[in-house]
Amino acid sequence: MGRDAAAISDVIDNLRRVFQVINDSSRNAEQATGLTGPQIWVLKILAGDAPMRVSELARRMYLRPATVVGILDRLEGKGMVTRTRSQLDRRAVDLNLTDEGRALVATAPGIAQDMLVKGLDELTDEQFASVEEGMKQMAHLLGAEHLVPQPLHTESRWAKG
Amino acid sequence: MGRDAAAISDVIDNLRRVFQVINDSSRNAEQATGLTGPQIWVLKILAGDAPMRVSELARRMYLRPATVVGILDRLEGKGMVTRTRSQLDRRAVDLNLTDEGRALVATAPGIAQDMLVKGLDELTDEQFASVEEGMKQMAHLLGAEHLVPQPLHTESRWAKG
DNA sequence: CCTTTATTGTTTCTGTGCCAATTATTTGCA
DNA sequence: TGCAAATAATTGGCACAGAAACAATAAAGG
Image (cartoon, rainbow over all chains, first blue to last red; front, side, top):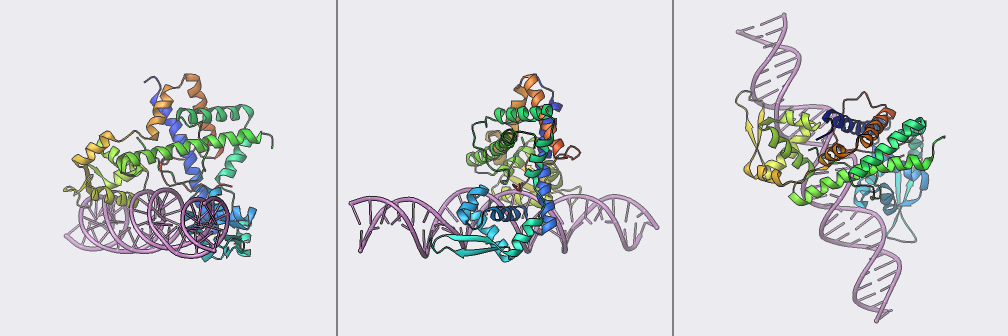
């Protein structure tokens, strides 16, 4: 192989660091609010567009309804969210924030993607160009350019060679 | 903000794609072998350096011992791995592959990190330089460059703004 | 109208991941 | 030597995440 193994290792280490920061960010939010990352995520979405149905929430989070049901159970148990059977469609459930939920989401810290957006915005043109090109290459060499981007969030099982 | 929102969005979409490919890769391996990503990962590590202790395995996977114990339980149940109490240090456990485990790991598909390494190796110098610089920037703007890189693998709870 | 089909939310099961506490053993120091 | 501290693996509890199966309800079609 032509390329320096150490340089490749550096690239992958940096990818790992990106993961780690986003994980840590989620954990910090957890410490600060007593809620987990996914739970805060739900509150943020509902704060923007309540009432909302379970299926729509799941769609926005790129998760299965079965998964968000569990998260909603815990949020409901903590008094952050209410479930109301819809009058129009009795299969559906309308999700709403309680006052407490609204209060919490107002103080919840920004999460990793916010940092990413803000950080990218503050780069010089030259720096940004290298990030832009680098990520494009990374996606390309994994044959991933054609994929519809999925969430920055799902549980990732990264196997390591 | 000075930067084009669409360009930022593209960068983040590509990061998402990288995640997705690695997730999908893990799932494919799962389909092909009947074992999960972490389980295959354990076999690959043991195939390279058996016997090995639980703590060393956990260290290499950047996971907690408590976590790999569960994975080992399932692998042992499937007859892929053996646990033997060490003679030298009776607290420790020596892990080994069974013949079946060795056979399986030989046929298990390469996983995402393998693709990443191979792909990086095949880039032109110019392409590689942009990936290298781009990832460095990405880690930097998350304030992550000082971190000891953690696993490309742990469960990631990515909150999304 | 009434049967078929689709949608909605839920439950159950498996497999991760973390932390905190426990047990057994070894090490190291007074 | 003897006892405290460190270490190795495990256990139990919680929170996600996916897949599969399910009941209730709605929509569509003959």
